[in-house]
Length: 371
Image 1 (cartoon, one colour):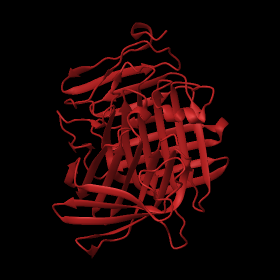
Image 2: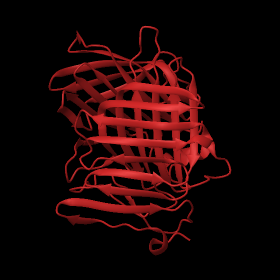
Image 3: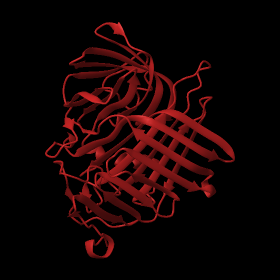
Image 4: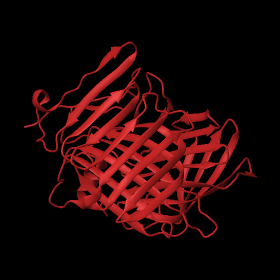
């Protein structure tokens, strides 16, 4: 039986201005315990667990990626990794991959695209997960997987270590931030609303940065150098009760970095988030002024599980610098399930009609309708 006393150690203190917290999530527990979920940002602990304690219907996940710009031959490697702590019903879309139930509350997903477009994927089930928070950064040690992540207290950089030779993968990932962190509707400040939609929260520690990954995969070297990213999502109830569909992505065009998000609730209410920087300055961080839609074949909106993979997405966002009209054109599909797809590809567009330098982006589509 899940017990605060026996299985959860959570220490939060302010000592000389430094916030510290330690949370232990066991591999298995039975529901029944109430969980407190944080929806308004505090003065510290930006990237820490938002559910205390985790229970059967709640979840937290820490996501990382890096995507390399296409070369002259169109080679375009990318890497993504997600550390999940989730109850059996929390991140319920994962249950599609485990018909007999989740093997652990602590799961890791690893996905990569090789330069030639080939794909590799792993799901690792851990023992207990130990999440520690220092300042605003979080670190996670997922026992039994050989995988961990470590964040700087000021959110300036994150590192991942992967040591799973029995699974055929060993290596490291590192991302160094180039722009400020943010919440869905504003900057990383105390008192911000952390909800994307009712029941789901989001904090974006590294919206854009320089990332690099070096791996040995079954004896073969894999590397990618390019735009890196890290965010953290969480929820207080099963994910599909909050989201009917969703589009999210990030990319860079010259001096501009963009993160876009739109979520349609089961009641078909659309919620959006727009984040744009010029250099290291935030132009917009708000929940309005952006429109994201698929284009080309399989671009039905809202998407269903029968829709298929669209050719790409258009993003229109109004900023103090002008109107961005952007296009994310898919080159690779990193994950291609009917309920979830992740893409990477070319990022192009204009600012008030003037062309911007071409760039690179990575994005995803959730389609959770049953039909």
